[in-house]
Image (cartoon, rainbow, N blue to C red; front, side):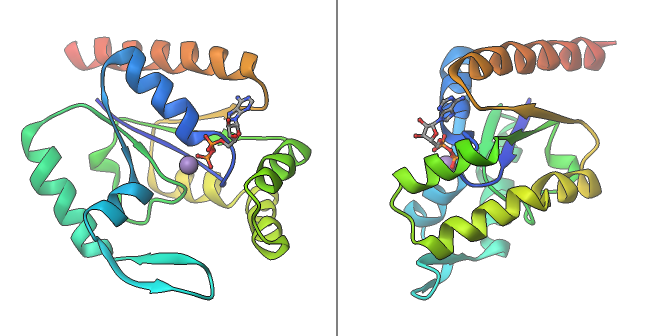
Length: 169
Ligand code: ADP
Ligand code: MN
């Protein structure tokens, strides 16, 4: 099973994917870490304080290291220009209330500009919009509280089980 956990920055992708990965004993790939660890970037952008991903090399990485071995994995990423439908069985789009999101982003000590940009992303629903354009199996989940997180884990596991039994038929 290949699962993508996505959503605006701060919606809880990394936390949720780690818990889910541990529970299901599946490898979790945090794309932002992968880009730095494997040097899959073109350059460092000082203005935006971020690395510019080298998409071709990321795709190549997935093809060689993972897809070819047919291993299960969970991808944690805030966008997914690099992934196509054929790579993924299920896409989870996380959402958070704007007040909650603002609080989480402030805790990260982001600049006001960076906080505003990320809030705009959630307001405009950029991630979900893009997901529906690319993927077929999509679940949108609210992820504001710890209770939400526990509930979301159960929902995702149920959805994966359903997909698995459908694949067997
Ligand atoms: P993302 O990877 O989407 O940017 P993180 O998983 O890093 O988000 O979460 C951002 C912050 O919000 C972290 O401090 C995390 O502990 C907290 N958090 C994530 N999910 C929840 C949740 N469901 N309830 C409460 N706090 C959460
Ligand atoms: Mn994250």
